[in-house]
Length: 436
Image 1 (cartoon, rainbow, N blue to C red):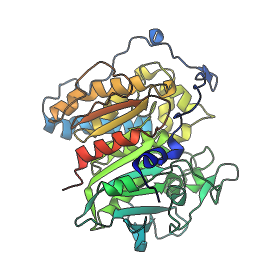
Image 2 (spheres, rainbow, N blue to C red):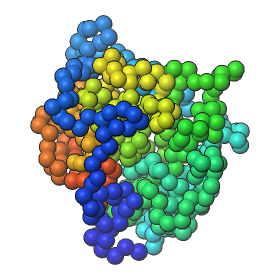
Image 3 (tube, one colour):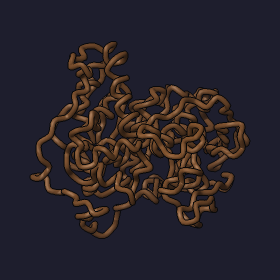
Image 4 (spheres, one colour):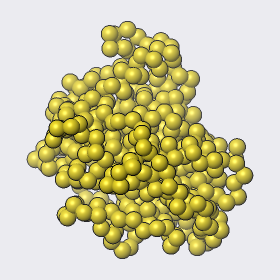
């Protein structure tokens, strides 16, 4: 068991600590998939962002009702058809099998639950294997920190009571036992429990594999129309599928009387940062969003030519499967797209959003994420919440907190460093009030 706070901080999310106490980072690649990458601010160029408070017919949005009933649906439509793809609704035959109903964990500090979320009566469909911890001392439904994970659930925590699950192997296109050792996305749940939060996680591959040839094994293949062999231009990619899976977990939370389903903060890193941005934008049941280094295709501005671009994301050898096929139309021409990341950030309003970035993560463009939040600020203010309070990009280790938009950039690169955990916990306490 972990004995002191300094040890806890050093081990929290240890596999995500990509830069802490590491040698100087190697220069970012200048060419990826045969496509040049710009890291020179003087070459970013001028750009004009789409206005979140202007309807498609050019009329201004002046009140919250017009935002909710007209402008917000327009923006959701843009992202569904042009970037992430259209996802189906809640499965008619969804069911929850709670096979671990409340075992003691972490020396009696937590109650562990394990849940299989069945997405169909057909046993051949994918299933979500959900791991939940609740503080044993809780006397009322608890707020949740819900993180979508790159690894199998037993790899995420030090808990021998977790039922082992398998992960997808891109080389064989089959499910295998995860490699031994500490997995990417490892978590330490005890500080959260001590603060009064529950913790939940699942492996993103439970919903859809994360590689080019994984389609037939995922949830998206189950929703192909009769006779359809290829995706339509607006069919969902894996990011929309993973976000859809997060909504299925929220379905379960609404049935569990020990969980306050109206106080759930979602979290993800890198491509899973993109996932939680879209999950939070699409499903307003989530109370708060923490997106770590979501970059291009997430919170970073596409029209700002810096770091990764749409062309890099949708190159045939890289990640075209993560997005709607229509997204590739804007490779090299982001200014022709009807949407940009400032609109994605705006879709989360008025709920609190924390964008966590890294000062040397040029590929993900931390400044571009900040500028997207600045440009979404008017929507937060329209809905009665605070913007970032500045248009000046803050130095590393200078958190910007509010009841709406929040931003923090650590010193270091992609993902998380140990000190980010303190920022997360402060954000969660401010927004979800675990003491209530």
